[in-house]
Length: 615
Image (cartoon, rainbow, N blue to C red; front, side, top):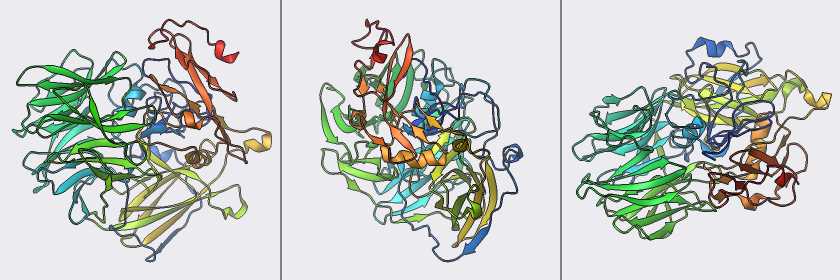
């Protein structure tokens, strides 16, 4: 959808990072969302972030004095050894990003992170290029000796001992840490740090815990080490994304976006992603020969991360197809053909990483519960092997928080009610449950998730801030609770509606959003009801849409939920570059072509009016 008209909705929900990662809704008027996990709203006014609970204005907008009670006990406590799977940023699939803020809707959302030149819709950049948070492992990096794997989980960096299955937390604090990379001697990790407004590079010494920072006023991403201990990373400090060294030297300039660098062990082969002109290209630069080779090209390869083999001979990469992603390997000197390795277990293998000896490829993939899991597969192909994390060593005392949300319209409020939650530990770091996936709301910088009414989270012991809301149906309620180490602390929150629209003959709905749109998760229609109930939405018509030249999720055409509220039926989005989007609802067959007009392949000279699909 990059390069096409802006996304539009008739309102209702705000789903995960999609149209670049967003969803919009009938009641919300916010930006679209998708399965990326990031969302954006159509407002540019700044609101304080719940990521910083010490900021009084944020809490001041929440309703106080709502009945709640805190229960503590030692039974059913969760230890650090509890099994967790991966979850985090944004799956640009279902972007239910309904922001509930008291700030008036008064302008078009533009950007939350520093603006990058040459970006038409910044929501695409923030949805596709920035890291996403998950409770499970993401972006694995194998140590130089192969004995350890670094990854991000719960927004922190962890290191897994492959032999024992023990994962040790390396970072803590309010910010979120992603995309680790090892130094050549294994003594340091470089990674991306994200405070919900900006990103920068951190290099951490694993023995001393000392950190040095590479930070520009722009977005900084994707660090990799060079043999002499220096860093190559992507930064928009010159306006567009280019590749830079940590001593301030630009490796690329005046080109389209340059992102996601990967280096051979000796530093002579640099592979990276180039984005521009409606196409994404994977390029290889050989410093010895001076040659730049185009290895791959396609449109919107949003989840592709190229990984060069240690000896610089091969490229492992995940590449989109009509049905999902495949993990493949090609020869860098002869890139005309490639070899299939695996499509994972659910068709979305992410972030391939080579073992030091070049025999294994590590990757992550979300399960049916949207939690990321860690896998490895022989580089020559075969069946993926799950690498289980047996113990999670937080390095600090942990407790269990149980959040119960109830409907204030029901006398006594006995029945738990679905809600949208955001939870922050005492440092201000987002907390997420052990199943489902977290989303990011780009107006206020909140990491949030949906609860069926009762949900448990493992959190560092100490004060925890809980925010709960149900769409535009209720004011937001926040409470701070003290979680005790090794115990279960329960907090009950009563959500009181401001109005009962059904009694007045109204239903709430969202008629323009996409279940999946280039994100790291492959959501199913069955994932929608919880999100809708958490936003108090009655009707939804998710739209099948093109991802550039791919027309995905066609198997979902005809799927519907008509057995009571919420009601769900799939529609179709068709569009031209001149006339924008048309949402086709309650049609019997898919309309072809889905896209037409200048800028589109094959159908570029088709000048049919938008009235054609309505005929």
